[in-house]
Image (cartoon, rainbow, N blue to C red):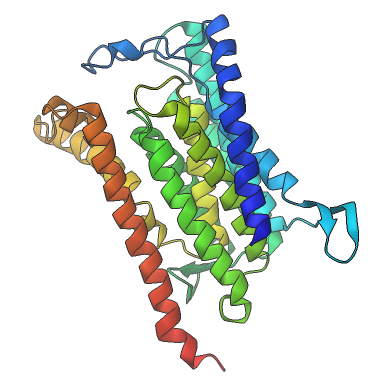
Length: 351
């Protein structure tokens, strides 16, 4: 439990202290956000420092790594002791950093071109697939279950090929879903913090009931989730409306990759649809809008993703953000409730 607090607190302190310096550095180099002209009421965000996801990822990585260094041991006194890291948690770290690299390339392309158009869809999707493919290969070597899962494996073994396809879909879909959601100040930082908090609980519970869940390295996975939670909360301090800094694609891709990785590593693949319900809602709104417009020449929403629809309906930005946080909190609560309910209903049959 102490290591969880150290991981989260270290990431939080690092991000909350370093972000002001990052803001000054980004402003000095004129690295600011580009706003679409059709998004009404957002022009005041033009030029707000972006690529803040670099700080989030750095804080999360350092928080996780430093949590493995003990400076005091009861009965032995002071002394540096390095604790081992699990292969699965390192895979989560890879998904976080790997997707962040793709997002950073996209952000940098926007800055270089001085417009709101970064990497082409082919290059961005190709990069996401490469990260996902390496993750899938690593997962097979780290012993990640290839069974389809909800709160636990369902007994349906996908085999290496179908599991590989599932990993590719989950990482790319979640990264893009979070990226679509990242359109309002603090929306992704706040909602993702709730999601990461749920995975801290899930992975910690799995570590406490190891014979029931059979997830090797569950406590270390919880440490990773705690580090990203702390980093996201600290970034929210500066990213809350009106934002002093924006995470950019660097942050949204990293967060999406980490969330998908946690679902795969904790054997809660299908449960992610519930826990990440806000991101699913945003993504579905875009899909429905495209199908309706291209197929029937009509729009379902005033603008997609759906958070812009409510803005155009006259809701203040902060109202949309807070209400969407509430939605995220509700889906996370339901997801954790389903996870715990599965344990309550099934643990009695464990021999």
